[in-house]
Figure 1 (spheres, rainbow, N blue to C red):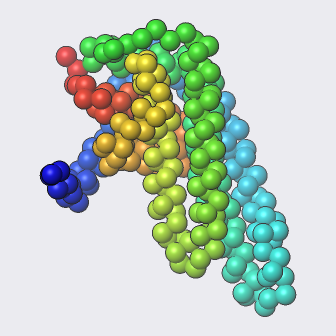
Figure 2 (figure 1 turned 30 degrees about the vertical axis):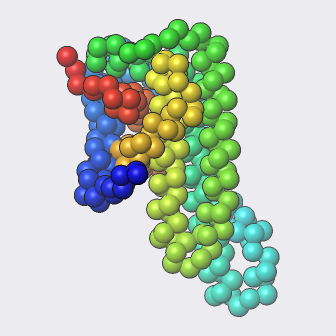
Figure 3 (figure 1 turned 90 degrees about the vertical axis):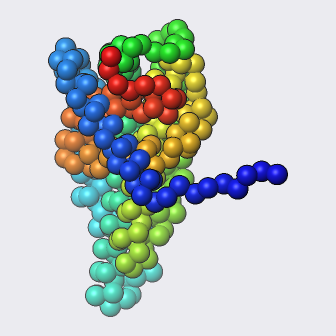
Length: 263
């Protein structure tokens, strides 16, 4: 007879969530101690950031037009009702665009800067005693893996974004609950995406990442949501991306039961 499963207390989950967020701060500390890598780490994010800011600016600029296109049923409504539903629609477009933009930005930046971010992650591993179970991964194989996994995660974010967009039309719920869900989903996807490099160095793939992170979901969510929030701040994605890579290396080691303290 199987023993009954125990449910972790909320306080424990909250502590692990905060601990996950703290991994981003620790990653920042480890990253800034390698000044030779700092500039290299920012360059790929600058390229992706320029594209991201341009796309988000265009989305905000055309939000009214998109809202009108999505709500033709409101054309004959009174001015107040029509304006209200289109403001809600515009916010839904911007919110879902932010979710998709952050996930896409991360995937694109990791693909562009794969050699740079791999070096940052390796430097973190060296400070912690090396990579247990490391396997040799050729550059092109690593890049193909990164692109394939990133495309799958972007596709998943699109599938999640569609119902979130629809839910964004619900008054109050669409402006309160939906953004929280979007942040949690975005945080989870970022955590899965960012640990790709260190997992791949150990010969582990996307299903392994998901399984390991699910085993301690609050910690993974804490890290991912912290990164997601930072990426929404102007220039935050560019400045935080290298630290997020370092923090993801710590998250990987923690999820695999490997120590994260320096010798």
